[in-house]
Length: 175
Image 1 (cartoon, helix red, strand yellow):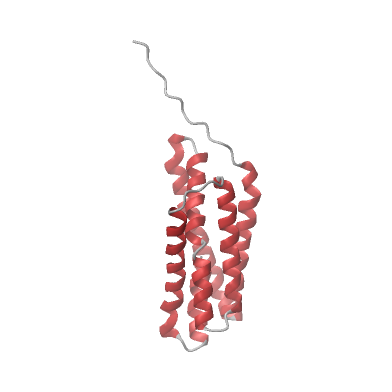
Image 2: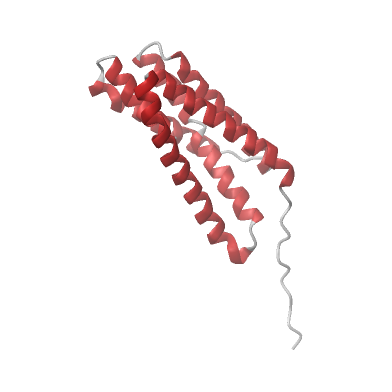
């Protein structure tokens, strides 16, 4: 996600809309909040892995929509849609880690996910700066879309490795 925020600033600067950057960032955040609310209020029947796959693909598709970028309004609408995939992806990702990790290592699993997100955002920002300087905002949008699709491919490739967790069985002590 680090590349996309820098791309917003570059887009606004390129179009003389620096004061409007918050609208684009806000649309992304509102989309994520709405996606999280929608996801969290549903009673799901689909398996967690399937929901994760759908969320990853939806986020990648939303990120590719920003490549159109004809103007502030369309970009903001695209970011609202792209943002809607963020929270469901994070929710399902954390839920998978919770179910896959042994009980004594769940906190560690959550810490690894948080660290990976921060490393990815930092890496995206580090790559986006020179890319924007060389090719403008559109280049950073392409970087963000490619990263989203790569994430979806990696996530989809790993779905077959998910296992059904074995829940601990309560034992009674004979007295």
